[in-house]
Image (cartoon, rainbow, N blue to C red; front, side, top):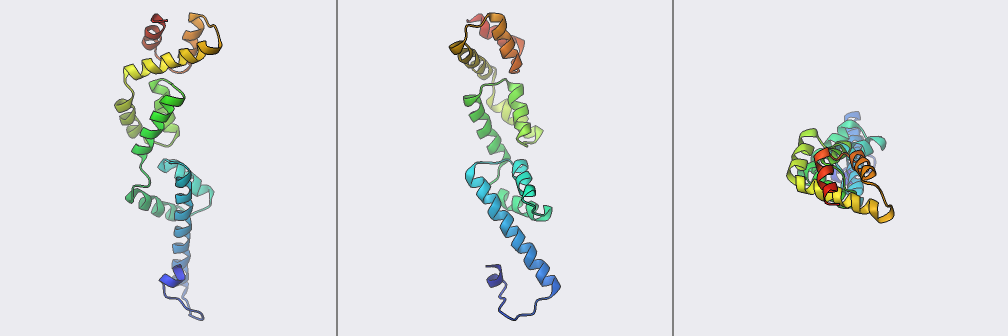
Length: 170
């Protein structure tokens, strides 16, 4: 495809500069295809996608170019990824605000973006609901004392005021 785009035919003499250009263009195309394949499986943060492309041995220059293009076409958006990850995480594995924040950081989301998303989507009421769901899950299989429930909630990062509020209703 690149050969056709560059109008190269059999027996053409290609300078070293032209060859280097074609190799670079080919690598960018391969990196782009690989990135799109990763994104077709599941959304990724920029940092996670970058790490995967580095593991595939693409050059930093190609990776930067691909990420720039993906952002331009809205295929890669850390704020949207963070929002979706957060909502999914709250539903599947309820945790405290601080644990969710650090989870976003582990996903490669910038600190300020993570903070904005958390502040927008995780209210005190959300934390209470998460803590209540944790308790419900724990009590479904075990008969735990209030002290043990308190320890379990604390180990999931819930603050004392949230723990006391939730346990008060038990």
